[in-house]
Amino acid sequence: MVPPTHFDVLIVGAGAAGCVLAARLSEDERVAVGLMEAGPDYGPFDPRRWPAELLNAKSAARGHDWDLTAPSCCARARVVGGSSAHNGCWATIGAAADYDRWAAFSDGAWDYRTLRPYLREAMARLRVRSVPQTDRTAWHQAVIEAAGTVGLPYLEDINGETEREGVGWVPLNAVGSTRWHAAFAYLDPIRSRPNLRIIADSVAAQVEFDGTRATGVLTASAAEGTGRYRRLTADVVVLCCGTYGNPPLLMRSGVGPEPVLRALGVPASHPLAGVGENLVDHSSLRVSLNPLPTLTAAMPDAAESYVAQTVIKARSGQAADEFWDLHIVPAAGPAKDAQGFSTGPLSASLYVFVMTPRSRGRVRAKSLDPSAQPVIEHGFFTDREGHDAQVVLDGVELAHQLAKTDRLTELAGLTPWSDEQREDAAIQQAAGGYWHPVGTCAMGPARDPMAVVDARGLVHGLDNLYVADASVMPVIPRANTHLTTVAVADRLGELLATSLGGTQGNGHRA
Image 1: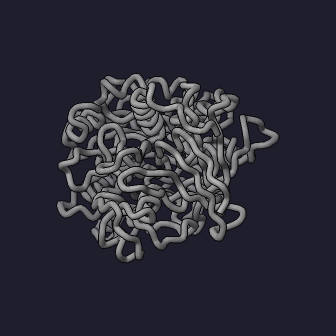
Image 2: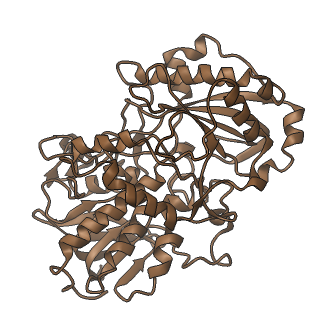
């Protein structure tokens, strides 16, 4: 056992949320902050040190993924910067109604009005801007024109507060063609703070407790494997391991549903039924098209363009409010396999996403081995009412309408879907996600048996263990979740910093 190191606050996970928390909490020079990451730290932005795939904003990366054998929608990056260093750089915001629904899970502490300034700050820090004119492909321009012919208006600002249905170019967190991820935006400006220490290549094995107080984290060196552990102690522990990463860590630590803990052989030191439950992502189906030579000729540099550039926001026949409940995302580029790697010539598709899904899944620890990948059960299209299936079929019908417009038939053909493809079994078989998992440590009042954290991110029943990332979101926003994750971490960090004021800073400076 390596001698312990003590921090006032130990943040576990240096993804988007962890980087934001480190920046916020280390503002107080009296507070010793440790930022722990299972993957490598390539330092501040420097094209000579950072792998090219992590810098290339025009293509999602997989080289630092936790599990390359998993479906691409399970992708999560093991590197300082986390999945923000792997993603497609989309920067969108959900409907105000999504965030207003959080009020019911936080006794009114969270809503759109409260979160709005943090969302705007995230956009500024991540340098969000539109797809440059020089990168806008003929395919995406044609889809915008096709959408107009079926009655969907052009949206100048996809994130505009007054916008509802329509089509437009998606904003990106990119500087030139460089993915401007959370480590660059939030960690680089504060790396020199003497009260911050970044601990890379350290896998969290379990959180240790003394009664209801977390005393620190037992870690394993990524290089040495799980045979040699190191103890990092702290007055406060904050988990930022993500929607897929937090539940297994909590379960290995004796926090979670009792049946799961028994199966793992872990003493149930703190039974909490909601850990790992309420997994939700935007479920999807792909409508494949047949590229014509005209499309290939119009996109000679497809491999060098942003694959996803535009989005259609639409309402299905099941929409419960005036906001969109569908995304239709056109894509054209080199064909990819199930893991997201390019495999062949030009392909074209219209992806249909359910933006207000009711289906829920779960995440479980496979074993006590911290290197074991979690068991992820998405449960796509399994809601009892069949709501999600009906929404996606409405979207498939809209995709067919788009594909049949004169503008798109010039570029790609469509094989109409059969009745068999529209059946429940076929839909579940073909289902995919949107890389937006949330909810497995959901926020909610203590009276809710499935809630994991309160409105401050504090785990129910524990004194000093917090969760501060996408896993706490009680309702998924109708957007990609990067901006919202950053905003949530920023606000939770601010709340935690306020509670620490004057009471911390007495630990041993790391």
